[in-house]
Image 1 (tube, protein in one colour):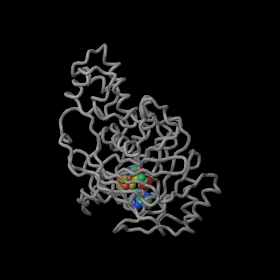
Image 2 (cartoon, rainbow, N blue to C red):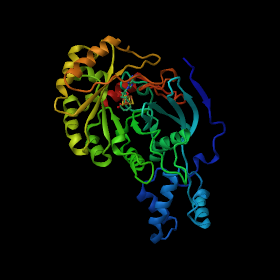
Image 3 (cartoon, helix red, strand yellow):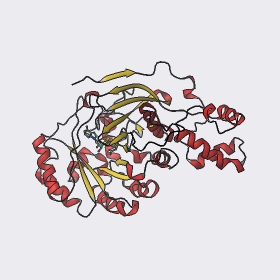
Image 4 (cartoon, rainbow, N blue to C red):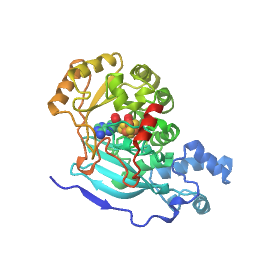
Length: 391
Ligand code: SAH
Ligand code: SF4
């Protein structure tokens, strides 16, 4: 097997990274138009300018105002004085033996987040982060051991998609037909953080990713994974309309309280109620139930049967995730035969039950292994106890 490749990309931080000039990246269309007007673009022109700039940013992937050649030189100079086009910067890029790419990105404040690209037969999935760290304390998750540092801005969320498209050279080239095959065909909010605790920024970023005159990914190609922030689930259907994945992981409240402590706030029954409504509200087909396979914790035949009973009536797909270990993790991965036996019970009950192949294990890029190296602060046990009680 070939060894993974690690490449240091960032050497000198860009001067303007902390600059106060408004960043056009991450603005929704109405925000972009309002910003142009607020800085002196006549209202009559603003709609057209918004459309032009939007295309440069999100269809052509342009990073310099000077390259926006259908705008007058003066207007380009005005944009350059007034705004910036700022993306997260790649600090390191690691390429796994299996082709998975993990990017460590630097954002304002010197914080770092991870983004993972997973190429597969006929599709490519970009796994993006929504927060630096996470307030929640799921006991099997590496990110959960790290304090929440802050929410990512919409620019930093959509910026992860832009940076990956840059690296994969996926932008349309003027004069050439739009490429049919997409390298990033799917986006999953399954990196660091709980996306529904950063709702507005996640929504705005996904609106940009879905916009037909830019990256143009359909809402069915975006999956948001949540640990179960019940009040925001209906809003997700209403305001984003993407597919939903739920970190289910247990079939009794007693076990789920331990694995996904937010269950103490919104238990299985409450969660299932919200999930039952989701497909109708979002007009989408199936919810993905993510289920991490932890040896002797949640992996018995009885668990599999209970799982099937609990989700009865919900259009669902069950994604079994073999536990990905990390240094100091308090669990072990279920044996392969156990995972298959569990999958078989679910399959016989009529559900698709794919077992997620761990990708990029040699570069610690698999689900739940992301944790930024710079944010060394660990949650203290007192903090974990307090947060767990609070949720
Ligand atoms: N915060 C969100 C999204 C990020 S985690 C959520 O919890 O849903 C993406 C998925 O990976 C979740 O289902 C999460 O529970 C799972 N996961 C976390 N740590 C893992 C680990 N060590 N091994 C396997 N899956 C893990
Ligand atoms: Fe946060 Fe999700 Fe990890 Fe739980 S599984 S600690 S919600 S990132």
